[in-house]
Each structure stands twice: as structure tokens, then as C-alpha cells.
Image (cartoon, rainbow, N blue to C red; front, side):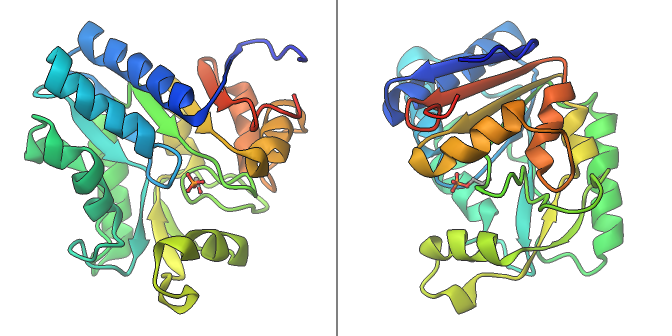
Length: 247
Ligand code: PGA
């Protein structure tokens, strides 16, 4: 494996081990700072991590009562009550099962009438609460983090995104048909993500191997948004061995 100074890389044997390793890292963050501000991700990848966090709450008394969370993104437009919304996902996988306080959960509002104000308020709230202590990320096969799609610049703050075809196709598996996948989303910007004190990126599966290698060792450029992580001072990658296969 090539070295990449500053980025810690854990290669695990399986999806299960990736998930428990990530949950232990978040658990340690919560125990060390019970009022941590966490940045959270959705998608298929972190489901096992959330399952382990729920288990740690139930069996080990991991206490979420002082935690604040900001989710990376939400489809737009989409009602919170839709079972495809990330609000629904978070309730289903984590918030509905642990003792987190509902008034400290922040997810961009997929029903916002005034998108610009919603986005500006989201970044302002993160700042007001002292910034994100630990941000969890998944990664798209095109290098998107949050829903920051490949572009000619790195978006600074929370904004409305046009999802690219590759993302719509990748996410169609969660919907009844591809036509139901919203074409837009609200996403924290690369700048918002970059302000997090610590970042943990999870990836599993052979289909992520190429983008993981590119993210770690490719030229830093907005056409592959995840490459910007090379410049962040505290990033940890937790991979299964398939996603690490090209390192
Ligand atoms: P996935 O999505 O976890 O469902 O692979 C990751 C992403 O698109 O960021």
C-alpha cells in the first residue's frame, strides 16, 4: 500500500468489521465528548455502523442524550414522511432507537419553500453550535461526497444540487423505479464538510475500489470531489478489503 501522509487507512476483512470499527470510533467520540456535534451520512454503506451504534446504546449504555447531529443531505423536493427521505432513513436506522434529543437533530428540509434561506440557515446553525466534531462520509463511485457531484469547482456551502445520471441510477435501488428518484437534493458543500474537525469515510465493495484509489492518490480536482480530502488534516478511511483492493 502506498503511503498518504495524514490520512489513516484501516482495511478490514468484511462489511461487518468495517461497520463495527466505524461504530467504535463514533462510540469513542461520544464517550470522550458527550456533547459532540456529529455529521452523519445515509446510503447503503453506513447501515451496519448505525446497527452497531444502536446495539451499543442498548447493551453498553452509549449515551446520545447530549449529542447534536447534522446530516449531509436530503432529496429535494421530498416530504419528510416519504419512506425514501433521509429523515425517514435516519429515524429508521438510528434516531428512532437511541436516546437522542429530537431538537438536536438537523437534516436539510426537503420541503423548504425558500431553498436559499434553508441552505444559509443550515450552515449558520452548524457554525452557531461550534462546528462538526466528527463527520461521517460515504462516497459515490464518481467521487461525490454528500451530494457534491463532479463539477468545475468545489461548492463552498450548503446548496441545491442537480443529481447526475450515475447517482440517480445508483440510488434507484432504493426506489420502486428510477423515475421516482428525485433529480435534485440539498447538500452540505465541500466547504461545510471540510470545516469538520475529523472526517471518517466508509467504503465497501469492489465497485468502490477504483474511486478509493483515485481519492487517495489522484490529483486533487473538483471533477473528483473526494480528492479534496487529501488536504484535510484529520481523515480516517475505514474500508473493507474489496474497496481497498487497488491501494
Ligand atoms: P452508498 O452511497 O453508501 O449507498 O454506496 C454512498 C454515496 O453515494 O455517498
